[in-house]
Image (cartoon, rainbow, N blue to C red; front, top):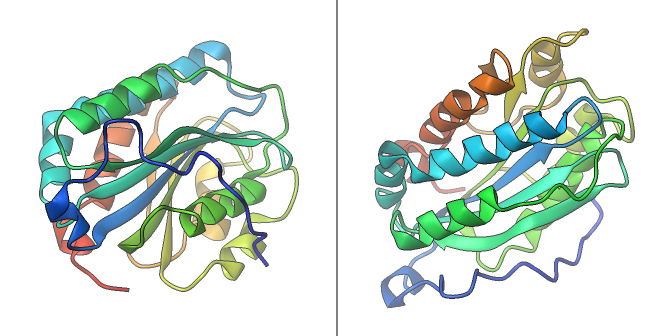
Length: 230
C-alpha cells in the first residue's frame, strides 16, 4: 500500500494562481516529474537534467501543447535517490503555456541538489510521486508520473510491487538514460511503466536528455490523451 505523505509545499507558486476560467473546469493532467539524483548521476549530469527539463518548458512547441490543454497542466518536480531520500523541489503550479510556465522553468533551472551518492530507490520514488499526486491542490482528468533514471532499482521496494499498488488510472512513463548494465530500459519496461498510454522514452546519454525530455513531454501531454476522462 502506498503510504500517505503530507506535502507542506503542495501549493501553487506565488503569482501563479489559476484565473477564473481555469477554476471552472478540472485541469487536463496532473504531472509529477521525478528526477534521479542517485550516486550514478554526477554533478554535471544532474545539471544537464535540470537544464534540459527547464529548456523543455521554454520550448515553443511544448508551450503550444500546454495551451491546448483544457484546464491547463498541474505540474511539480521532485528529486529522488535511495529509499529514504525524496524531495519535492518545485511546488505544484498550474501551467497554461504563458509567463507562469516560463516561471516554472526558471524554478526548475534554479533547483539545487539536496542529496546524492545514494543507491537507486526507484520503487520508493514511485511511491513518493504517487503520494504527491494524492496531495495535489486540485484533481485533474489525467494523473501522470514522469520518472527519469539511468539505472535499475537496487534499494527499497521493488518497482513492480509499487506499480501494482498504484490507484487505477495513474500512468507512469519512463525516461531512461542508456548505457548502464543491466539494461535500465528493459527494467523500466518490465517493472515501472503502467497505465493508459504508458511508454518509455530513451536518451543516448545525459547530453541527449534535453532532446528526450522535450519529446517525452510532447507525447505525454498530447491533447487527444488529455481529453480522456478517468
